[in-house]
Length: 515
Ligand SMILES: Nc1ncnc2c1ncn2[C@@H]1O[C@H](COP(=O)(O)OP(=O)(O)OP(=O)(O)O)[C@@H](O)[C@H]1O
Image (tube, rainbow, N blue to C red):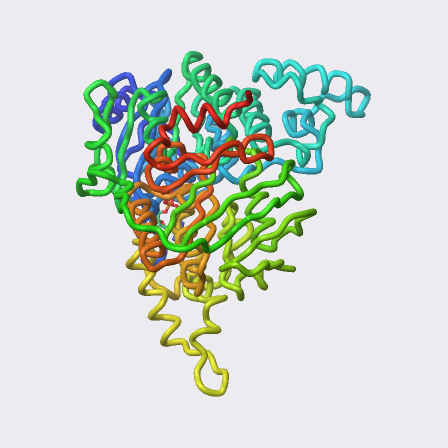
């Protein structure tokens, strides 16, 4: 690690082009991977006591920047300035020592250790050479109270916590090390409404304590609600830093991110619906408390809205053969069907693309094309049952173009793609299936605004092709804008089905919230 602290420092820091009172400055940072410049001469600054959003399309370089800050990614050029000192981190330990903490989407806690041990790892209190549990738990309780997590016992194993609670433990660790720069990577993408509220409160507190909070998100409303400044990246380049949100509007931000104007991201296309494709009749099972009835028509995009834990995914898992129902049945084109496995459902034309596409779907060491064609390649077989790599490649190229997947090529290893682009490959895999009813769980989680429009358009294409589509989403604006009818679930029950023209976000939320 190199660090200089002299009078030239302040001058050099101003040269970076940021505010004079910046605490953190990124100076001309370039990060290269084979075939890709993930960051290309990026410079910007952030002040202490501000929440600074980092925005950009999938693959723009946001995570790479966080990994430069945390010492995981090495820069080929450039440096960081922290409070007037220049740094180039060689590893994560050096970054941590300088007070930088990153709260990643994939949490880095030890699941089999207790909350207290995770919080105080590296500084566990000892008494006569033994772990002093009393002091350990007392200290952990203090931190949990500071975070508003009073219901969590310090002895609880981390594996038994919700994602939101685990994230709080990560934040607690950062506070214990008195991190001056705390960066969040899409922190609210898997949180419930209550957990999101709690996280936002903590973020405000970190700001009020004078820390630099960097906040990576694809959610526009969060940027306008809680951020003080925003930096936009595109294709590894710094496009612009807005030091205040006062004069910035939604459309300008979107066009800076995608490099063109997008007037209506949802682009809803009205269409006539056809016959009933699926009839769910008195279905009940794990996570679904009361018998549920509804239909999905051919040509329809049917939404399922509810708070996290309302039973939406559970309901569709019963329909799609992932779980067996306790009672009730599903009729497809008028015929009662019971699927013993998801594979059986897929062969019958019913597919469910899961919410957790990352852990449930990706073969990390395989290529983009193998990940995309792994299931649909059976349709492309040549005479004699041999694989047809040419058609597989053509299918991959088709989806790279339709979903704007950013990859050096179809044969690139999927783990080298940004998180959002990996998601798009898995969506492409599901869209390549020959299906009649397509269930998508949170189809746009982690996906940038330009690609979201492509995905909605693909869903309308399916409906126009006389298929049925079910979208599960916690995004109120999305679900009310893209669906023809919306079923609202609460506590494992279907409370209402609302037609599109009555589906205001207020009405949907009112139905979804506990009575
Ligand atoms: N280990 C790696 N090897 C090769 N290329 C990589 C590696 N990590 C990232 N890249 C590439 O660097 C570019 C920037 O990726 P990065 O993950 O920073 O994007 P991002 O803005 O965080 O995207 P997302 O919103 O999808 O998370 C992408 O083109 C990606 O494919």
